[in-house]
Image 1 (cartoon, rainbow, N blue to C red):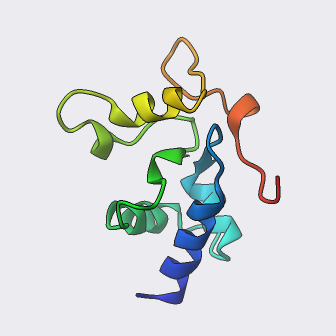
Image 2: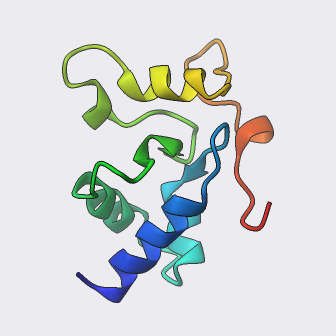
Length: 102
């Protein structure tokens, strides 16, 4: 596993329940600000113990990988943690975006 992958995993572990981070935010915090897609690939292979459901795209949309069956499991998990979605299906990033250190 690369150092970048390890750093991304460590960052994901820090996202508290009820908050979300974006792929780009994690890439930036891990030292590779233009590597959002790489972060997505890393998280697609992450251990089940990581709270990857707390990572959304830059618009606050959930990942298709969580809804292969037609049910948006990522949204369900986030709502169980108290995360609200806007009427258009995006996470309200103004309210729920994680800031490292909080």
